[in-house]
Length: 154
Image (cartoon, rainbow, N blue to C red; front, side):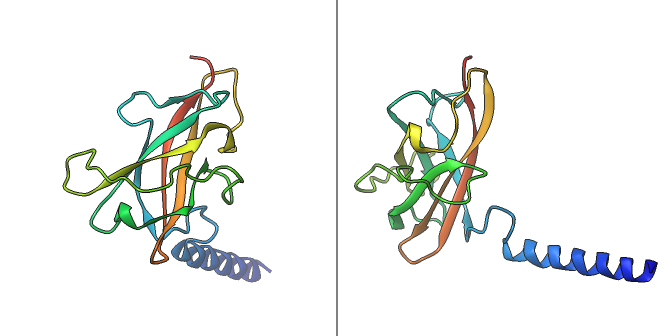
């Protein structure tokens, strides 16, 4: 019976390894992992989730991530544990206005997202949460970038 138990364990570990290679079950099956900054040029990244405004988010371009190719209709801001984009969580921008924010020679972009549509519940205590920008490029590649924020009273 111990031999059957070990074999089942080996098969289960092999299945988990294969899932990790495919990205399934990890919460990040994106083709590209990108760098983002919530409320660029401010530190710490504090967000008032009761605010009815928008959250500016910088997406930093690289050699493999051309921000001018972002499909805005697929780009959303959600709490890291969300399985998908929530209604209203998509970028509010009508077009991409590239700018090199970090002076590395690659275009970056600042997109704006509705504060109350991120799926992140407001908090009366100062807490750290992780927000992610998810989307697709015009060619079909998917991307995701996550960063920590502080919510609640300071």
